[in-house]
Image (cartoon, rainbow, N blue to C red; front, side):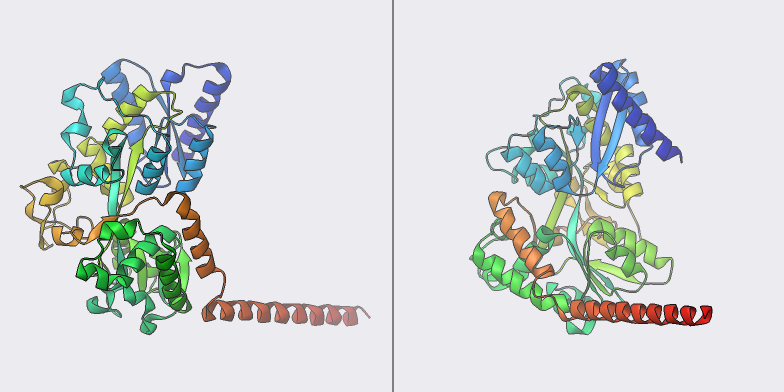
Length: 432
């Protein structure tokens, strides 16, 4: 109830600012993914900002569920959000379309510039690769990150079966396979699997595959997914992790953050799950804070991004969401140490001191795992080809399981109407 009340209060502030001419410098509009922050940090930011700058600020916090929904509002210029949190390929698209303002943290004292103090060398390198002509580090700050892999039931699926992308085509698990309803996150791993020969021969790299929108590759992925679809229990946006915890699914193509939540939740009800990044290779993903072109309060936006990079705030957001902060502060790493885990090489992320660190490998993959992962990229105009392929896979040429479900639905409807008709006849006879 408190959360709902706060939303109403913030919405009222936004309306007041729009209708009554309240100084926009006292309002910060934040647009983020649903369930992607510890909301108690928002009033703390307001108090911190007041203490640091002497200025009042009120956070108007709103959420979205689809990248493209957020992007559409920014592109049209109908919303003056000050801070938004798009995914990597959308950051790339926004950069290419000049929809972002360069970040300027000159007003923030060095002693509390948590962005510069806690940058991960790995994150910096990956962000530089987003666009070779524009350094994304100058326009965005990573918030959360992770990998794409396989979440599986260890009681019925072996590690050897799960550590290949081809597990989603394994007839042994037909009817209990869940796949993200996210064409980009499915296309990349499948193409990596299909191009193993070329990758091993060195005729193509993982990064090159992430840019591959050729008709040939799209057709190959489409053909593969149409083989897979007969065994798919569901193409899911968010319910897959829940289905796995309830033992309804055995295999799920999923994100590491969802996997962490599912593994912990399943353990409480006696279901054993684990997560693996397949041996063929995979993708890494990032969500990051940016300041859109039409932002009205750039100063407060910059301070907010800085506040989100403060180690204790990053830790709280990790604990609340189950995802991993893209924060290179050693305090963040220390908060996740678990002596029950095997030692990992995390020097790529935290520097030379992070060798032999014991943390959950789902949260922080070993350097050897990251070495076989690549960042997805925006396809620009070719994105329509990807979406069309995805539509054909899910819609056209429906799989056997789809026909069975439809047939059962038709039968149930027929039975319902026959029963209803007979029931009506009985009541009429009774009235006589």
